[in-house]
Amino acid sequence: MTRHPHHFKIAFALAFSAGAWGIYWLPQRILVEGGLTGGWGTISQMIIGFLILLPIALWRLIKKKETGFELPVTGLLVGGGFICYALSFLLTDVVRALILFYMTPIWTTIFEILFLKKRPGLERVLTLGLALGGLWIVFSKQTIIPLPENAGDWLALVGGAIFAGGMIRLEVVKTDGVFPIIFSFFFYGALFNIVAGFFLVDYLGEIPAIEAFISMSSFLFLISVFYFIPTGIIILWAPSKLGAGLCSILFLSEIVVGVISSSILTNEPFGWREIVGSSMIVLGGILAVVLAPKKVCIVLSPSGVTNTRHLAVGNPLSDFEQRNCVPVICILFSKS
Image 1 (cartoon, one colour):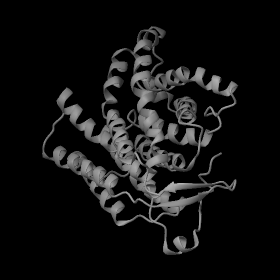
Image 2: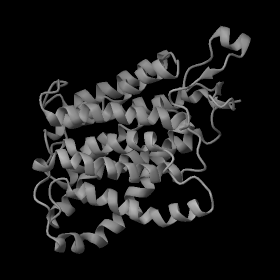
Image 3: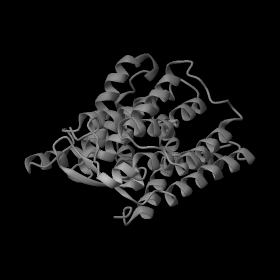
């Protein structure tokens, strides 16, 4: 069996969706100008997304289908990782938050080795080096790769690790379609946000006036329906088709779009660092997609159900595994 038949299309859709998050700062700025300052814009987006999807979840519950309530670990990992990333901007410099969070490909590779028993091949080392090297070149003018110095730095770093864990889990969890995953992201992400907001209340700013929430409700609805939810579906669906490692590299397209969009729409510079760094990130992503292994391995869940898993999401089987058809047992990241 070969890699997913729509491997390249899925990779392109993921890169496009992740790239769309490169302009995430733009709707955030509009929310701030509308009165939803501090972290209240992010909290509002998570709650609105949850409310939009809630009727579908209740309908699926009545039909005895998976809703996403059954995936607390998955939801807390992907939702919590994103919330840590979003809130880190309130507590540290944007550049430091971006660099520390986008250590995600490194975390993903480590988790693949520890939990999925994969060995990174030469193609992973090459593409990872290109992509992270490009990231460093883009931001090296402002700072060398920083060590955490404050709460915001730690939120960004931990958020990247948590999100990487979520990607690993998404790779192996089997669900009834993508809806349970996206709903668990909004539901458990909103809960995580509320709890985190309680501890970070001094940094969120004053609760905006109710008029601000009302005046921005239409905008929140539109960006949720046409931006937040569609891109989230692709980003959270792709790891099960491409693998967490490849996806984590393609996520760096957000940096490329962010750099270009900020230079066009603001006075941010776009010089040789941005050109070379962005080109390296793009090249790393392209090579990661093209060089992705084509073989498959067998994954045996604790329930005893055997599933095939494309090794576009990992490494070729070892000689011993090929001779003996030894299954890879993913216990920690099995479906809950």
